[in-house]
Image (cartoon, rainbow, N blue to C red; front, side):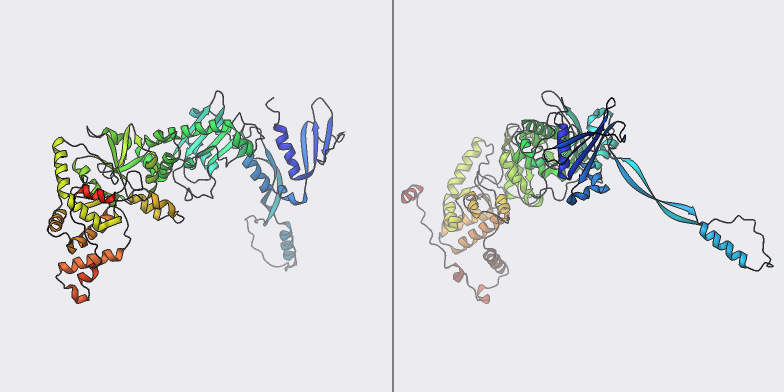
Amino acid sequence: ISMIGQFGVGFYSAYLVADRVTVQTKHNDDEAYIWESQAGGTFTVKRDDSGEIKRGTKIILHLKEDQLEYLEERRVKDLVKKHSEFISYPISLWTEKTTEKEVSDDEAEEEEKKEGEEEEEGKIEEIDDKPKEKKTKKVKEVSHEWNLMNKQKPIWMRNPEEVTRDEYAAFYKSLTNDWEDHLAVKHFSVEGQLEFKSVLFAPRRAPFDMFDNKKKLNNIKLYVRRVFIMDNCEDLMPEYLSFVKGIVDSEDLPLNISREMLQQNKILKVIKKNLVKKCLEMFNEIAENKDDFNKFYEAFGKNLKLGIHEDSQNRAKIAELLRYSSTKSGDEVTSLKDYVTRMKENQNDIYYITGESKKSVENSPFLERLKKRGLEVLYMVDPIDEYAVQQLKEYDGKKLICCTKEGLQLEESEEEKQKKEETKALFEPLCRIIKDILGDKVEKVIVSDRIVDSPCCLVTGEHGWSANMERIMKAQALRDNTMSSYMSSKKTLEINPENSIVKELRKRSEADKSDKTVKDLVLLLFETSLLTSGFSLDEPNTFGGRIHRMIKLGLSIDEDLDGLSLEDEENDMPALEEDVDEGSRMEEVD
């Protein structure tokens, strides 16, 4: 019964290339017959009296004029290799072989004889005992022989315990045309409601065009009962696992399945689920060997992070495989699992910082308080980390908290809380003055509890883009500017009340609220904190001008020497509001 439908698939496809098909066949206990048809709805059957066939079947295709390429040996070889390489029956091709053969050159010898006879008879000859070397010439000889095409055995049909690593390596190379051995292999079979066998390979290197949209989405070849069906079935693997190579041989799919039927087929969804599960198992096996996993993660770390973003079902399993540098890991990388084991007693969250490079985030002002308290912070410096971490909200019940955003709350004693409130009240007037100077550039100015040494830093909203994400989005060639208008979160300037610059600013602003130096210094502080917080400057020239002015002050050079005066540049300073209490400010707003 399993053979029903299989004959039709191959036989009727013959009319794609042939306009007439002849079938000669003979059963052992019957006479020979010839069946012939031109596919016009009629066929003829007659007895074969030639005696050409003793037993079996012979099919003759009379090719169409535009399909004569199928007479070429190379074309037929490619077809057999692609579709029937693993068929259990032997497939042989009648091939032409040309060999060079050396034969004795009789004509040359006869000519030499004639020349010898014509010479003088009385000439004395030296007798040479050495036998004369026969002259030879090379002749091309054409021979024909049957050549077995499907020598490669289907490795997935064997027991995994019986297959050696060398056999897997040979199969991997023939499957992928890779010159290197594979990094890991997963050979398994699934039985029950659904039956299929599969061999999956993890390569050593990432292909250079891994994320190219025009490239086919996966490298899994689909077979049905050893017959190759297709190698670009999108429903077999998710995009983030497109680098995994291998084969799937199903017993349940019909042989003559079309692409449309594949898309609706529930069997494929079950196969996909199993393949993803087995891939993750294979990656965990690689993770047991540190050197191998470092190679793997360097090549395919981006794919795993893409998996976090795309695959909600397996997010927790993929998170186990992520590796990051941290404030305590040194040159090594750490997993989230190891991070959790090193967490402090009262620590409830996992802290991370995003940035352009490890170097740029190592000394970030955002880490100062956390480092002082001995809390570990993960460095996420790959652009795709920004996307991944938006989906990976927590790990093992611990929330992931970004150091550069609002919502960073550290454990405080009652004494610390009281001291913080007092400091906040003391610096409230300065915060208002800074807000008035900066206007719409910042949403609010507050006293910080995350910085220790730096004078100030710029924090983004909890649910908008971070500074690093804003940088990434600005770099998109085909970006949509409408999105940045609401995703670019309002910045909050946090000032450090312990810093000497901020203390001096407070004194100066209290002495004279319209002090022009205060305004210049506030703008300079804001622009430097833009840079240290990972943002880009809108007006780098203005910032450069402020720095040059500071250099001149340091070198005691008079501003007027360059034809510039402080007054000329500062006459656009806005009038500062009087120090009014917060209640009356709110009334004005109403």
